Image 1 (spheres, rainbow, N blue to C red):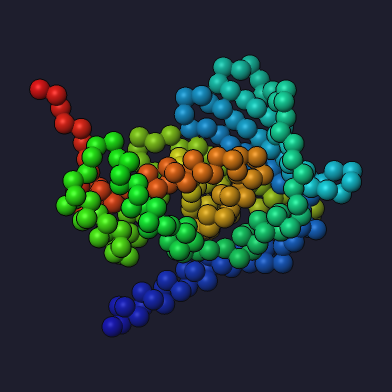
Image 2 (image 1 turned 45 degrees about the vertical axis):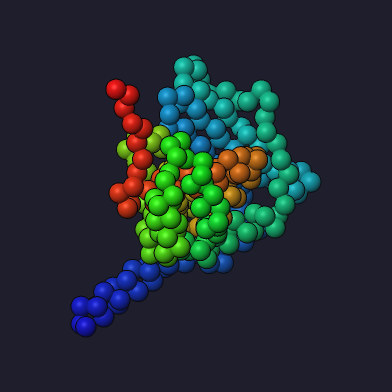
Length: 248
C-alpha cells in the first residue's frame, strides 16, 4: 500500500512540476504575441523545409504566409514563387494559445475521438483477407478498452523504418522571449508535442498547425492513415499480424 501511495504522490508531483514549467504562459493572450513562426523539416530523402510566419498586417489582421521553401540540392533558401497567404481569425489563434496555457499532460485516448465502427470497417480493406474467426477476435479487441488503448499507444510510437518529420511552432513575444512547441511524427497525430520541455498530448495543436499552413485539406487522408496504423497495431498486439504468403 505504501508503494502504491508513494507512486501516486510521485506522479502528482511530476504533473505539478510540468505544469509549473509552463505556468508563465497561464496569462498568455494574443495581445502579448509579436508573431508566430512555423517550421516543417521533412524526414525523408527530399530534404524539404517549409517556413511560415503569422503576424499582423497593416490592417491589424493576422495573416499566415509561407516565407521559405527549400529542397535538397538547392544552393540556398528560396522565397516561394507562389507563396501561401491566408487571413487567420484571431479567435482561432486564441484557441491555439489555450492549448499552450492549459496543456493536456496525459495521453487520453478520448481526445482523439476514435470511432470504433470506422475502425472495424478498416478490417475489410486490409491487403490480405481476414478470416471470419480472426475478424471477430479483432472486433472483440476493439471493443475491449484496455486492448484498444494499448494498440493506440503503440501506434503513437514512431517505428525505426519511419521517416520522422519535425514540426515546430514558435511563439515570439512582444517582450522578446519565446515559447517553442516541437513534435516529430510520420502520421496524423504528431504527438506528443514538446512545449519548452513539457510533453503535451493534445491533437488539437496538430489541427491548428495544419490549418495555419493551409494543409487542413489533407486531414481526411491523415485520419485515414491514423486508422490504418491503429488497425495494424491491433493485429500486431495479439500476434495476428498478417504477412503475404511466399509464392512457391
